Length: 233
Image 1 (cartoon, rainbow, N blue to C red):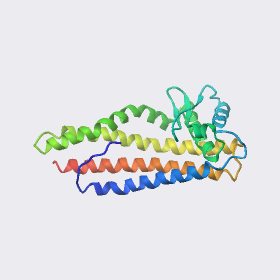
Image 2: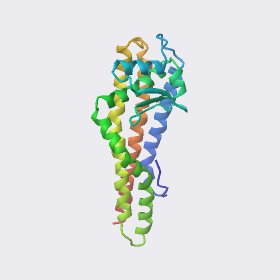
Image 3: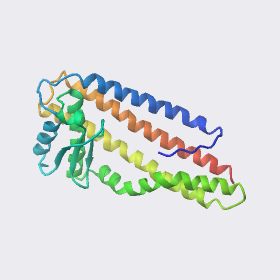
Image 4: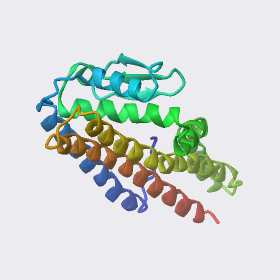
């Protein structure tokens, strides 16, 4: 997300949210590092778990592919493909199974017409535009309004950034629901034993913190833009 580099006191509002983001990311890294070393007794890999869970849900047409990069796992609703990072695709660790089941949860949401996911997918184009243009437009408006010009560009930047904030808020129930589905799927399908579920849950709970942190940062930045806008009235 682009940031405003205006040296003013409103940056103090952003610092706690940024610290929360760093803490959340450290929790993800720590949980993943710990449970990526613990193998599930079932011996099934992330790719196998995803394919089996999709088949059980009647979604055998959804492909499971190996992607690239570290922790780049995602579900592509346009192409109906789950892409798992190599370490998740090939591994039978508790972390890998949790992540693979989480992405499968998104595919199941899509298959069942889960409303928050549909809203997020439909809202993404607006959020994408907002993330690219909001800050430049606001900065242009902020600089020109100091010369007595109209506040139009500031208002437009705030509106576009609000789309990004709404996208983050909609994302929260989508991700939390996918994680709940993942744990239920892994338990119900006997991919993980009872004492192994804790590890997968800790990885997914840590990942959920990053979505909360992203939402907090977006909300704080929106509040900051509104304060800066108010100073031009």
